[in-house]
Length: 175
Length: 283
Image 1 (spheres, helix red, strand yellow):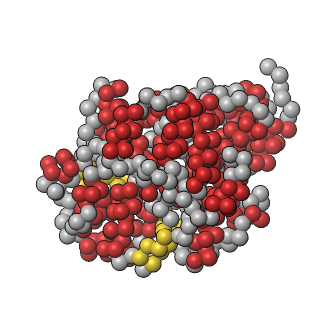
Image 2: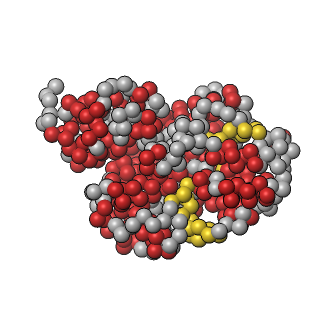
């Protein structure tokens, strides 16, 4: 494997705090992570790879997309490394640098969520779920659940809209 | 007592019963909720996952409006609460965001549980209990976002919070202690990696069953929707027969206060909560 430009770790440190240099691999982040069993690299391994600049390996990993943002790692790290923020930052860098996300549907869901906010200023669940199901071809998964929720009146047919939509559209221009 | 109110998107749809029950109990407790004018989505998990700046700008718009109105805000949704707290901290302390908003930190942002746990409100809760929920066994389930990270949400009780238990105690509920009250339910991955969410839900209900609780009690609308809507599927997938309804704390408060609206709330649940309440002689 090629060792990437050393400034990668500096860039991540600039965006998330210089504590990242302190990691001594105690793995507290990884043993407390509720989704570690679904990851291809443990959170502690991601941190080590950032320190060593193995950008490609990080950006092609599923871990950064599997992270559920529960913030347990950040809360418990004895070195005060903001691991959850690092995961956010790595996802964003991954997209910005043109890598293809290793969990396409997770990324797609986030994009569709943003587009729904852009349309209404608030989330319209029905529209958002319909878009997601359409784009992933998973209409039939969860159809029973969807109908049940609909029957309970838990899903609104029409969106609520924020009046200041212009503010919102300016923020979400690119979605 | 008057406080600003930021309901968030879920409370207008999947968590309608949470919104309605909060408004109902606040009337009883003589707390006036004033909804923030023309609020927008906080950006939730998706925004902070893929676009930190958009996440900040969406959340801070709400803070700016609330600050102009001059009211502290109470936030029922743990997700929204967390994003608004992130925006607060970023607006005040993060060099990258400081110049991007007019928010100056003059108002407080309260998670609904912290708000309800003020001494004065706890006194009012105690005074308004007409029908103590004697015999009901309940375990508190907090999830993640009202507790973590503590440096952002200003929590001191994040490993063993007792905010829900304090209230349940006043309602006469038998509080069940268990070890999974702050473990993630995978709500953020419920649609895109349903398999992961289901595994986490399975673990939570398994532990709840083992602890011998009648029900779970939460304040997070994502947790409630995720657990309530997937319980039957998870039971089928893991060859279990879970029968554990998930209440919002405000619903049980309403029930204990003698509210007439409880039927409307309980009808919204996918896992029928009335069964256990009937068994315990509470409806």
